[in-house]
Image 1 (cartoon, rainbow, N blue to C red):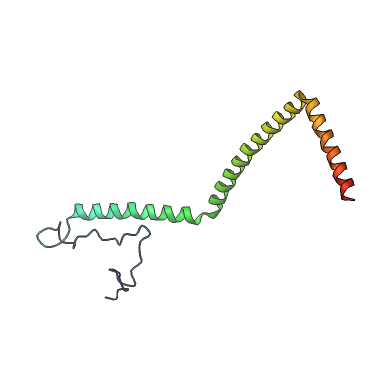
Image 2 (image 1 turned 180 degrees about the vertical axis):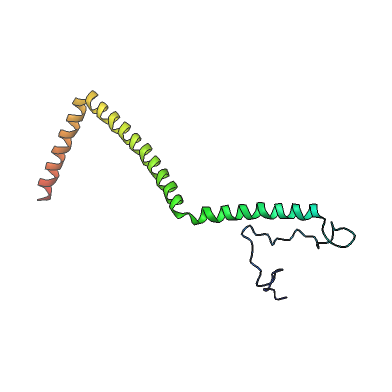
Amino acid sequence: MNTPSGGGQPADTPRRLDGHDGHDGHDGHGGSDAHGADTPEQVREQVEQTRLELGETIEALSAKADVTARAREKTAELRQRAAVTTGELRQAAALGARAARDNRAAVLAAAGALALLLLAWRRAAD
């Protein structure tokens, strides 16, 4: 049997995605009948367990392979975040406009002072 270095599986045996090697740690003879074969009930349980694991593996692979669905999910998430941010910006702008209306004289005085400072700075630079 050909095994890769450090592994316990033959080189031609595919590795499972969940990291398990498919072995349950038993030598296959622990639950056997007197002739060394598994009982029909044990075989049915093993088949059912294998079906469940295969279903989970297929589901995981499908989710990873469905790039379109992942892109849609990301787009929806970004749209939601943008909507929240837009709402917050609108609210802040409304508060700023209200503050400017409530303090019109102070805003006009500050704008006038800024204009005078800019003119003085420009004349000093020339």
